[in-house]
Structures are given as structure tokens and as C-alpha cells.
Amino acid sequence: MTLLFMDGFDHYTDAQRFEKSVESEYISSFNGSWGRFGSGGFRLTSSNYQATINSGINKSTIYLGIAIKKSSGGTPTYSSIYPMIEFQDEVGVVQLKLYVNPTFGISIYDAADSLLGSSSDGVIPDIKWFYLEVKVTISDTVGEVTVRINETQVLNLTSQDTKNSSDYIRKIRFRCVNNSLDVYYDDMYIDDAQFHGDCRIRTFMPDADGNSSDFTRSTGSNDYECVDESPSNDDTDYIVSDTLNHKSIFGITTGALGTVKAIQVNNHCRIDEAGTRKITPIIRSNSTDYSGTETDEITADYLFESEIFETDPDDSNPWTQTKLEAAEFGLEITT
Image (tube, rainbow, N blue to C red; front, side, top):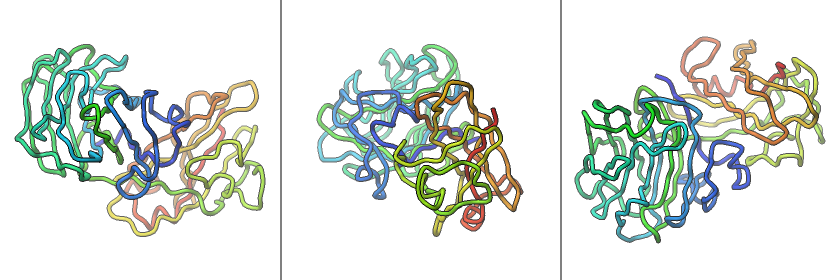
């Protein structure tokens, strides 16, 4: 399996959404009160609002999972401009659309608004959180769409024409179910090989200085206190360095966890002088530092540089609470 993307929408603000993966401007808000477990989540308040998530990958087959809740009672209304989810290619051309129909079922339409198939009525809970998972394969002849609600399959379409443009899916656009019903979204993943079931994505901030503290803190007596805010407070406090191979890493406390599918290291960073800088995420496990993938050039604007690690790099086995709380995480300047 390859877990390609995940976001709990709880470590950045409305103003910072373009620094992560959200491209659309028409979003109501990111707010802890919109999440299903009291943290993270975003809300769309009418049909004019949308959130386009740019996954940063191009795949012909993806498995999407996301938690969704319709905020109040009312009947969804079909309209070709109000699909709840659009699957788009790398340049934003719509390949496929998913609707919640007036009978609280799921309907799948192609880009030309031809119906490919529908689930039974009543598979969508009203005013309750549910976990939607969708497998989509893009093809002229062997396209597939499989839909699961709370891990139960409700629709399976095969041998479909799901291709409207290229062979890929890169962006996913979320909307409301009609013009007057708010919808909340939380806990999203994208995989290219399998469903993961109902997942919760949690954010843990540094709470201890680690083995390396080469960066200079802007204030205070502990480095981690300059990077422990969620959401990030940008230039209010920070750590800084302009020296090649400097690294700073930090410890975290997770508390009790269930099965850990993967972790994601997020570094929120920018440059403040002209020149070229790149970083790699660092995981220190079992007294050894492991480097992730070097980023593109860091810009003068803050961006989140993120990488997913499905297993502990020290032994290639799954993460656990014990391993995570013994490990340390951070970054190194590599260019």
C-alpha cells in the first residue's frame, strides 16, 4: 500500500490554508468546532463554497476516505453544479462527480452529467457523522467506482467510462449538498492501493527538545516552546538557522493510540534572505537519525512541507505509541 495524503485540518488557520493543500478560496472556515472529535475540520456553508484539495500526486486509481456531517435536517437537492465531491485531473478538469441525492443515496455521474449508477436509498445518515470511502479508477472502458459508508459497501460500478480528460486524479473538490445545508468535513486520506476504514488523524506538537538543537530560538529557554503552537503562529516565535546541515528535532507525547496507519511530519517554514534553501524532514528512532525526501526550494512565504512515513524507518515495522513517544521529529537544512 501507499498512503499518499492525509489531513486532519487542525494545524492551520483559514489564512494558512493555501500554505498546505487547499486551493479554493470559497471556504467557510477551518475551526476546531467543526471537527468530529472537537479539533480540526472545515465547514462549507452553501453551494457557492467549495474546498479543492490538491493532493500533489497523479494516480489513475485512488482510495479516498473522509468524515462528513450534514449540519441540519433538510433534503439534498440534485443539481449539476452541486456535486458533493468532484474528482479532477492534474489541471482541474472534472473526471467524475459524486452526489447525495434527495433519497439520501449516493449517485455517480460522469463529467457530462450522465448517471453511471446509484446506491440504495437511505445510506447517508442525516445530521450524523459518517465516514465516506470511495475508490475511483479512471479509464475509458474499465473505470470503477466503489463507495463505502462506515466501512459497508453501498455501490460498486465496474466497466465504466470514467475518463473525461487525462488518465489521472490529482485534485478533489468538496461542496455542499444543496444551497442551504452546511456540511462539515474532517479526517481525510488518499491511498493508491486499499481502503483503510474509518480513520482519525491527530496532530501532536513538540513538547520537548530533542537530540539536536542547532537552530536558534527567537525567545524563551526551550526550543520546542517556539514551535509548539497549533495552528502555527508564523513569526510570533520560531527557530531559525542559515547554516547547511543544521538540524533541530523534538519529542512528542501522544497518549493512548489505536492502530497507527502512518505518521506525517509537517515543517512550517520560509526563508528570510535571498538564496536557495532546501530541507529534509528528520526522524530520530533508536538513537539514529533518518532523513526523508528533500523538499523543493523553500520560498519567502510560509509553506507546510510534509512527508508521510508508514513505518518506523529504524526497523520498517508499524508505528506504535511507544515508538512514537521514544522517537524525535524535525528538520535539517540540506541545501
